[in-house]
Amino acid sequence: MIIKTWGEKMFLDKAIQRINDIQWDRVGHNPSSTDAQLGYEFLRRLAHFFKEQSIKPTPPLYANIARLLGDSNEEVIVADYCTLEASGFLSDNLYVGKIFGYYIQLAKYADQSPDTMKYLHVYEPLIKIIEKGGLFILKHLELDIVNVANFPLHGWYNRFVDKEAINVDEM
Image (cartoon, rainbow, N blue to C red; front, top):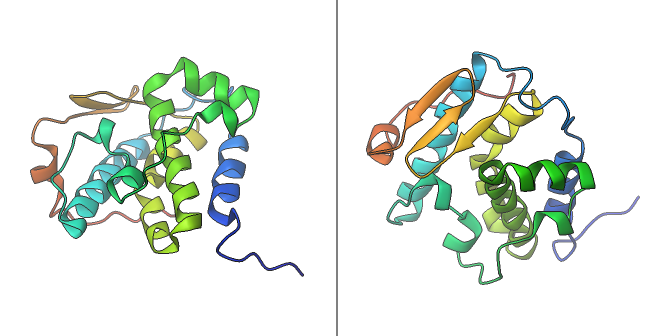
């Protein structure tokens, strides 16, 4: 039995495996009404992160949590970590790719600073949308859960910071 130590790429390896396991040819072909709840929960978790860290909220599109927590490395290049199928989809869908890049960067940072791993869950709802075959488009002023819901992002932080959590584990 091999036990990984904190110095190894435990969180990064898990994140990369998760991304590479997505059936990328299904993405956008299986929208579900539960995807709206996942979008809601992403915004709620992100607002909670900003509140907990006492950081001035930024638009969700620019919320690179690893960088906000002190990671000084350049943003990751998704193609350096993922399969051709995953990196092709994520480069063709820039707004989705940006979030997946943030997720990879935070996983990489969590391997160096394990106390930051608890924030990987912030990106979880958006990743679940993609895993289930749905699709989101995150822009500066809106989060569009394609064919399901639209969340205008003007004043998003104040609308979501005190909302109740939704259990997304079974979605």
